[in-house]
Amino acid sequence: MRRNADGSVTFWVPVTGSTTADAHYPRSELRETQHDGTLDNWLHASSDSYLSAVLRIDQVPSLNKVVIGQIHSTDVPGSQNDPLVKLQYHYRRGVGRLELLLRDQPGDTAVQNILLAENVQLGERFGYDLRITPSGLMLIS
Image 1: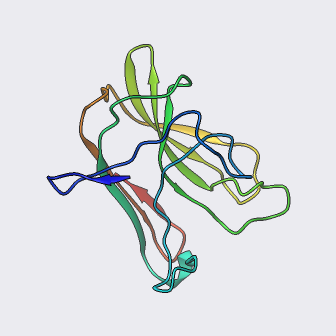
Image 2: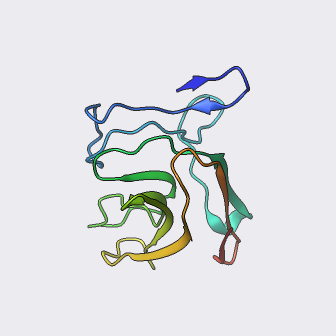
């Protein structure tokens, strides 16, 4: 990660980089923590929760997919810590698309792939806002 002169931040990771026990792909990411550095987890019922970003994808790895945001749920047996919600940029046949990968419940193996936007080119600036309400309603724009 590096901070640029214009105030933006660049995340980059080599495709041959190290991975974690729960992932097959290298990553560069932000993780919410407490002031002392311990990991922070929140419950959706405690308040409105938001995840948003303005970004651009300059290049993709050989599988043509980049995860740009995700929300994990409580880990359940067999879930392998899979995210409940994952936003990804998928570059197919020269066209970029934004996809929402959604599990109905923690531990579900079935994943819905919902197309959010097409024709998002490499290098094009775009943004997203994801909101989860205390009642569990998810809104994305």
